[in-house]
Length: 265
Image (cartoon, one colour):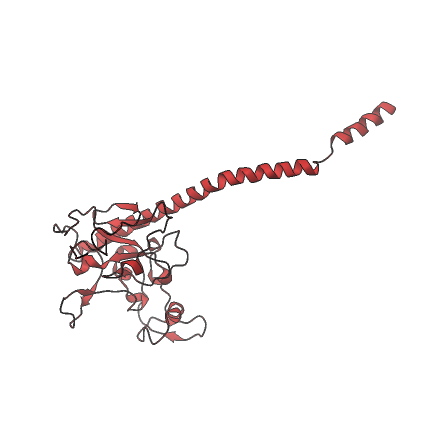
């Protein structure tokens, strides 16, 4: 009996828990491992987001190709020329119009369903209803965001996973220079760039900017140069259909690297 009791007491002694020092050592080791792994995990997450964003832009290009076959090779929808503008450049279908009349709605491959009959926009805060006819109706930009939400009229391929809560629910802008210069699919005269692999069709916009188009003199205000970090830059869709990540190019002898035509520095 004495041997059994001693054996039992010895067993209990062997099953003691961690001491405070041992616990601190384990926590320290876990902390070191996390410090080593976190940069790699963060880098992998950013890389995955960049690849998903590139896939989105590629799908946008495919949708543009389908659109172009029925629209005289235009890359994306534009509005009629302004009769008061002597340059005869086409107008844009962006934030000057309510969401159900902006350019993504006219690209059939995006499959955006616009309800037939009267369209009602309901302000979630006040319950105020509008059919869009009074847009922008004197509302501030923030009120317009609430009163005319763009989510229902924007395909999800227009969203970059790294762009959190972008204004007007889209992350990409198209290059209005192409419409202004009548550059379409198959255009051979591409100005100073010379190759379709260097002509930008679309790129990433700044989160707080509402625009759908990158127009003349708007490059610095609209285009996001570092969506995927200072080492990766942002993604761009080119006229030949490829998508590439690039850091902002210094100036290519002009103030607007999206402009394919020669300009005076």
